[in-house]
Length: 317
Ligand code: MLT
Image (cartoon, rainbow, N blue to C red):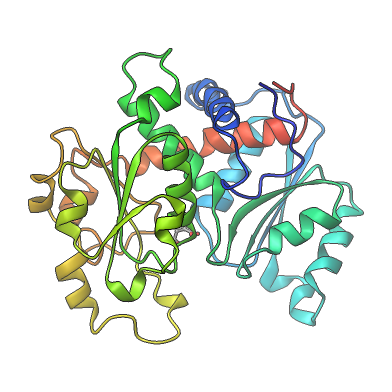
């Protein structure tokens, strides 16, 4: 298998074999972050530009750390201090950045499709770090990596073998979540059974077409689950009220210790962050023994190292 893409725009386009290749490479890159000197020369002389039009802590830092661990130079465009606030279009900003010859542009944008628009116009690679309500492919890849490394029986077991048949519950504000859309596709491609749960107002109509089972009951979703992925209530994206009160939401859709008794004994709890503690997840669960939330963050660096490595023309395949 070879990885021949210029861009990483979504999970929708990825073949299971490509996912396996990225995750194998990410798993081997994990070790670099445990060394006293956390750096290899793989991407020396290459440049990674990050351009974030929406707030981010984890994703932007994770891409920067990933690039630095591979010795690439990084440059972060702070959009609030850039010419975008003077009315420059996205395409003009990107063409100007490209004139400075970066190898990869990592973009997060509030408009769905913005990375695809740039990918068609730019010669450098483009990575989608979250576009509107659409996709967040590196989050889905790091989620797969986290489940695979936790659940595999030995280090030779392929991703699909580990993930086939696992019951994955994705719970919360599905309508506003690009993570949900990428995760549903990623887990179903690798053979898992995905159930999504949330209030009816936060469940868009197309979910079954992505391969997910849909319910409005948290209890139903978490029963016998191997993996429970809680999503943040994205208040900043809610133009109108999608629920009566946050308290009521939390009562029906907040994950509490009592729910874990319904799931498998070795259930793992995940959340892409940032957490609304006490809203979608109780602190006891977020910090409890089943939680892999910080492991997801650590795996995020490894996955982004693998993605940059393949796009910038590390060895292909
Ligand atoms: C995202 O950017 O979509 C985050 O990783 C998840 C969130 O904001 O809740």
